[in-house]
Image (cartoon, rainbow, N blue to C red; front, side, top):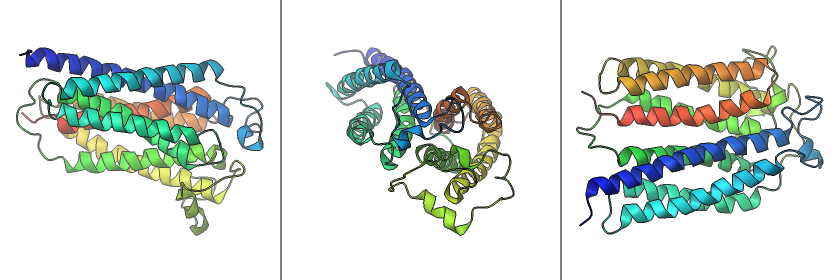
Length: 307
């Protein structure tokens, strides 16, 4: 019978390869989406939301080929990974996470069929969160195929609450992107003299809508999304920051806690710089990718056993 250690090593290598591919897909997808929206175009912000007006997307032909190639390779590796986890006998819990990863890949493939129309909000929204899910599930599979984790980790309510808020913050950021609402708020910390969303703006939380044009400065829905995104980001910074500092006290979790705290600071800085720069393209792309890395780092710290 095949050595279990060698099999786990193969599974781990495949899972890490999928982490890297997922990050590449996420990066290229963010570039295609944001450049197509008009970030980095000239003159900014007049050209923002040009796709909604029927203009041709002059960005990303090579990027689209790279995106599709990476996504196709990832799907093939996803099937190989599941086969490695299930045959001849299932290797748990890696098999469960690998199966969830493959299921998400297949689902995103079908969602992609509806992504051509920039006026539809929900396909882009699902694709953004799904990309983060690919990174998360790939990394979770790699962790599950690692060495014997030993005793289960201690309960970490702050980390769990922070992870939930991070997902909510990412969802709000995704809505800002797919609703073309970047120009609705170009100031910090509030949106002009508005510090809390007005009642009419809460309808922007609905991802199952069709938009006709980009949200201009002061748009109530766009302002609501920006403010909610920022408040959730501050709460996430607080909870994950405290959870990370608590992790520093335990030798078994110290390295993961350092990684989490470092990514937390980088992500916060990227968010501030993105707004102050007038939504520079590569800062916005980096902010999107770093959010997924931060989510994966949070997961890693939550699954590390205490000493």
